[in-house]
Image (cartoon, rainbow, N blue to C red; front, side, top):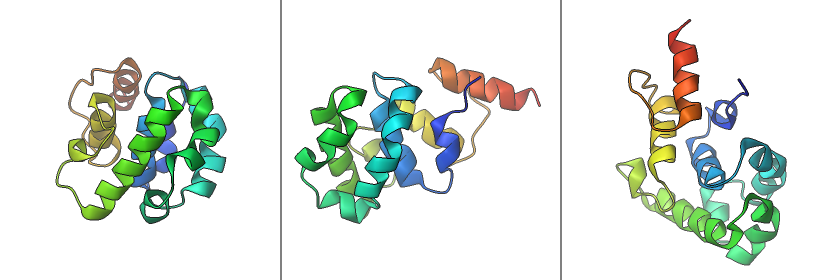
Length: 128
């Protein structure tokens, strides 16, 4: 099975959350291609929250819904700075990002995710 992008960002929950927003309605391959230039541009929540969506859009447009994702990434970054108790409070965070957070940030492996790739990942971990 292809390595999940989230595995590469275990040390940065904010970046992992950005990735989950980008993965909505696209593939790992599409997202992997743009991560280096994107994170060169948005190095932190603070740097990202000060940007205009038009600055992010050209980098992420290949993932589809670039205008919406650009706004969500900026809004999520601002809320990240402001603080949150539950990851689902963050703009753009849905079920996939919540389940990814549970696995990769909280280390929870004893549940069945709704996403097929997350399920396969946990099945692989739990079979070791």
